[in-house]
Length: 410
Image 1 (cartoon, rainbow, N blue to C red):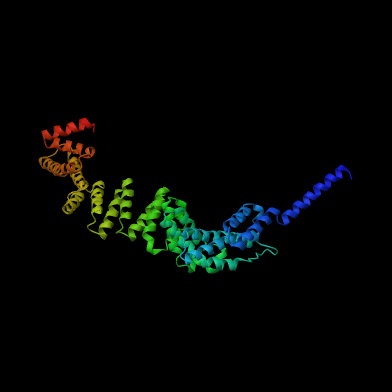
Image 2: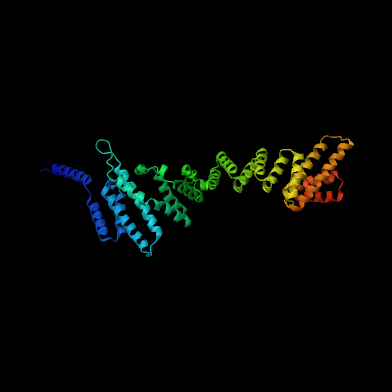
């Protein structure tokens, strides 16, 4: 036999062996599977059996092997059964481990289902295991929900989210179609709410928004949901959806401070005084003694140039509470701006001048009180008081305020 022929035969045999290796099971795979069966039969070293099968499935060549998946499931299930028995007998056992094993059982059987659902000859899947495994997981699905709540209490929000996410995902997974969880699982909205909560606590916008469809059906937590959504939209710089969430919350829950306060901040940052006035009026229609809304309305009236209304309304506010600085500023500046409007007319007759001085005097009363309550706000009260002292011929006070302006370069 020539050397060339020997080489050809060797290459052919190698190819045949390689083909046989692909069709059969590699020796190391057989060995690991046999070792896992030994561990399972003995009922010990189950974690090692699990590890052996998990390692095999890391190789893409083994992922179609259903027997590996089934051995992995048996290893996990036996650990779960042993842990469950210890808890039943009130023996020492880590509850978190039982929840984690539940999660693994879902991972393994749902992974096997993807293999089971692949089309075979004729183009249809065999679905040899689906019904049996779906029934088994359905009986244990509640543990995913409980596991999520358990890890929330431990403030392990990422772990908690993974449990709740899997619980909810069952409603969309073909494996569980027969159960129609979307229609029949009354706990689905609550699970979704807690999933949103976990995403919110982690400041993970994607996780927070992922299950909002079901979460917004949880009427018991609807107000909190709108708050989490508003904060998430703010985090994402989505101002339109942020405002919409706040508006819905404010309409449905006017007594909840979050929505009113956030709307005030939002419109205030935009200097949208018309919207601020509208929001304050809506709040006062719900609660006529709402102090924050009264202050907001006072400021909005000033900034929408409704000076007389501002003074009249602010006086009614001060009759209720006279210790807040902002109302004094609003009323004072409303009088001040009205006086200045006279001053800008140029030459005034005696009556007009008396009206102007009267307004400056009235403004003085408010602004000096504002200065007492907010001494550090010099940039707001110094220049108006300067103008008032000048027009009222108050020399001593004028010199003092002039020195403040000079020193602080106001």
